[in-house]
Image (tube, rainbow, N blue to C red; front, side):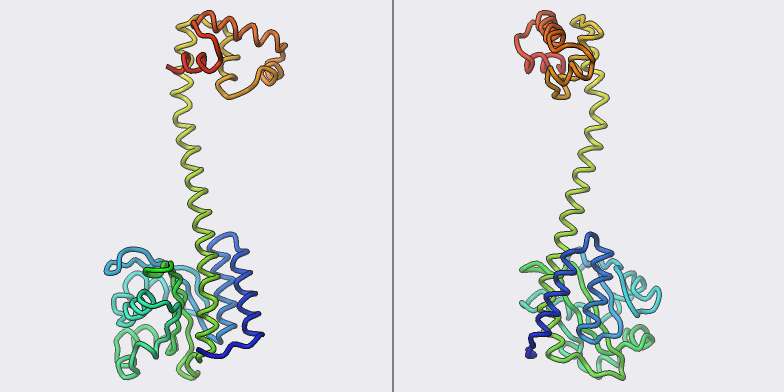
Length: 272
């Protein structure tokens, strides 16, 4: 591993803090791709989402910088099947504690430059050197990949470049997981609200039927509906512009009509 100086470590901390401050995936990808490019001296970069089982992986296009328009989408749609190196990258990332792999470690030069994938896809974009950062759980395949590239005219990524990228990976992974967790929570809350709204008309209709069955007056029905929403006698009195004593009188009248002795049982009786 390359020797990291104090300035390198400070750079890693700064990038990690910026990543953790991001509110959504688009912002995170834009911030981190630009910062990592600068940190390791890459000429282009991309982010790809990964999902599915080992032999049926699905790749989804994320943000990219310096890559030909449409190239990432073409790779995700079809070209990854021609990519003879991707499964080697993923296998290396999935079976070792490392977070970073570079092309020269897993692909012999002669095989690399002779491949259809290199000549049809990478060479046309002047990409030769590739570094992949895997964002992965403690064990298992990556759920996100950051690709960093250099041209044929440039040197390969150094041990120091790899060391910096390896230290950056956990912070970026944590930022991605934080955003995804917030998205899942927001979606669950949205689903719960939708379900509650779907249930409310049925609940309200049933309550109205039960209130009619027990012969509750219009005002008693208003009080019962507000009790169902959890309002206190004082809050109900304020909302209906009546006194607390009048509210309590309506409640006692409903007790008599439904044959119960407390508010909890009253609400249960009116909901059955």
